[in-house]
Image 1 (cartoon, rainbow, N blue to C red):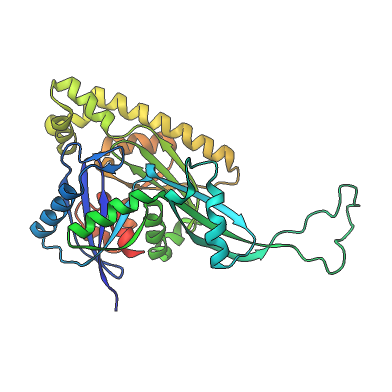
Image 2 (cartoon, rainbow, N blue to C red):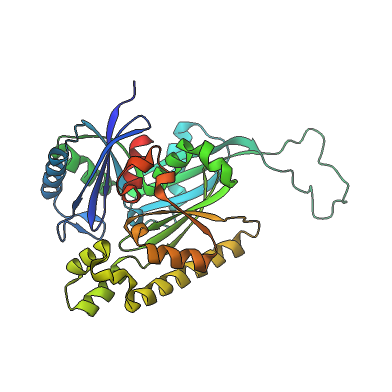
Amino acid sequence: MAKTILGIDIGHDQLKLALVKGKRVQRVASADMPENLLRENRITSRESMAELLRTTMKQNRLHANHAAFVLPNEAVFIKNVEIPPMTVDQLVYNLPFEFNDYITGDRKEYVFDYAVVSDPEPKQAEAKSADAGDGEAAEEGEAPEPTMELMAVGAHRSLLEDAQDTLRKAGLRLVRTAPALCSYIELIRAQKEFLSGFGDEYGILDLGYQSIRMYMFKQDRHVATRVLEVGMSRLDDVLADAYGVDAHLAHTYLMSNYDNCQDREECRNAYESIAVELMRAMNFYRFSNPQSVLSDLWLCGGGAVIQPLATEIGDMLDLQLHPATELVPGGDGIESCNSFVQAIGIAMS
């Protein structure tokens, strides 16, 4: 029998919770994040965060003992690696060395994990030698070396300790933790039949508060991620200047479309700037992947509800945009589904 798991996504502006049993979303809830409770992607007070979790769960009747936690993108290293077939013990030993270019300090301070992307299969046979004839075959009995492809993940050990201790203080047992990318992969697998109607390649655009991420997939295989160091906070700053208010109140204006502020000229200029940066990222992706036939993007994150922004992005990229509800089983019945995609996915995985 499937367990009931509480998916937890802690963002800079909101805490998002999703109660999931198997592939069915039972209930979702959110709460505003107190200022400075999350700083540089780290929880500054485990006790305060635990209290916020307990309060939000109680107010929204979320009953669970087990929890799954979304690791912040900025604090996680993700790498696709191709290696010879290995045992689990061999992988545990060798995996840390794949991150030599990413981590500093003692590797023992980090935790590493992996998911198998493809089972071991032979490499294509290479030419026997530089001067071999075009029709010359490999030596008889010489078999191509098999390889396996992994998605490897590394994170600082203290990050996991923060999550585990915070959830324990909130009365929850951490049973699963992974980066946001894994949440999206799980949802793609859950909606595999639906997504098959769009071909083998598609993208997910996460319009977050501090950054925007464009994830590219071929079926359920992650191909690339493009990151823009700009998010919805830019729109908050624009409106704060326009109305002479602080950024927090400006964010409230933006999300409620107070005074039709989403259509202000200042905001439209910001939409265009964001769309241009996304177009550059998309052009680079297509240059690096000349066989790409990407034509569809699914919008997630808080910025997905800002329709003028979505329209500008769709026009600039010349792509078909889709709502996050299509990624989530039963998503049409979930209010503000775009904000809960990561919390839902991590609880399903």
